[in-house]
Image (tube, rainbow, N blue to C red; front, side, top):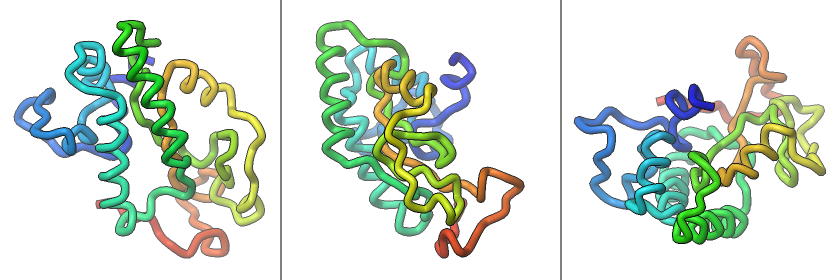
Length: 172
């Protein structure tokens, strides 16, 4: 988990800054690391709902060009999770470092109610009835799962299956 906190980024890759903890505006919150989000959420400097809204706004801005998501959770579901996290923050009873942090999962991890196709046409309409163990643990830790990102077919060797998805994910 410590490795995840130091290496992972919040929802979308962040640009370099002069200072890691510098947030110039609430809209800029999408660009902080998970470790920094944890610090600011714990200190009351950032609200989980504001963080989610910043990530969601950035997603709406960039997704038409990047094509990185294959499934998005309903915004109301994400907002409810962020509001529950906000209540825990206000009570100073956060569940841990991921509480209130928006995350996207690769499309090879079963997520209840969201299509999990593993990049394969044969699973294009597969919607799991339960979460994979890792997803259940992330949710229990308060993480806000916003959606599923594209993967190559069965996450193997960079092979994209055009019969599954015509759009190519662009990496800026």
